[in-house]
Image 1: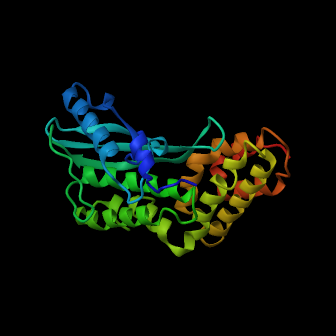
Image 2: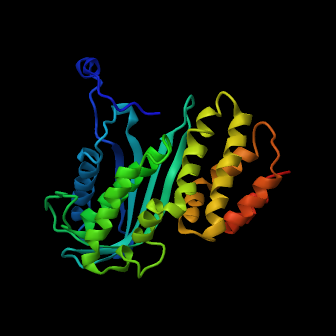
Image 3: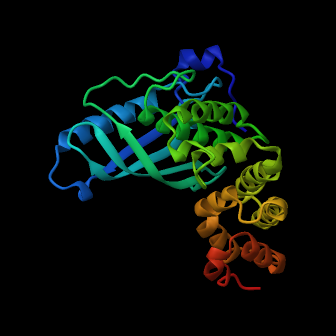
Length: 295
């Protein structure tokens, strides 16, 4: 588990506390033709600095605890003034204990991204106010990343970050954009509201069981790690029992399907009969992958 206490000796010796994210930002502008590319270079630089220099959480991260993440914008419309539309692929990962492997904790494609931006404008964020759609979208996903990462180290460890994300959603509803409201489907509103709803507590327990309880012991005991992943999948089935085809279940498998396939097709053998049954029920869209797991 991360240690968040700042020790004076660490500060003196150079292990200075750092912001939470190690983020990269990229733009694909191939669909908007011959536009002013300089504005995208400026925006990329500004967003990268905004993400990496903002103090998002109350707890303190050490430099080696920064969360690696990426924000990939696919711009489909730009009016050459200040209005942008497109999608945003957000990905984040965390290291696995005693290994060089990093595991995906979030891989989500937000297809409803609209914002206004004037080159060189300041990006100043206040959790208690709505200032722009761009800031709200970026801050929302920054908090979701931090929350999921924290949940992977401690049961319900991401509560504060999810509360912040929920506040951002509530304030952004002034825009009446469906991505922020309950009128949409599988959007930002539902992503964070489901995450903090009591119904989905088994989902958050599964995040912890899967990461700290399973992946983090794989290096020393791969068979026990596999058994604990089976337990995490069982927690997910508790959600499916009351919310079939839940959005959070889809979000989980968008990040984990390839990894789960690799885990159960490599290393020491465990009984996978129940695993395959659970996987096909939880994520039928990945049935071709689950079919590669041998009994």
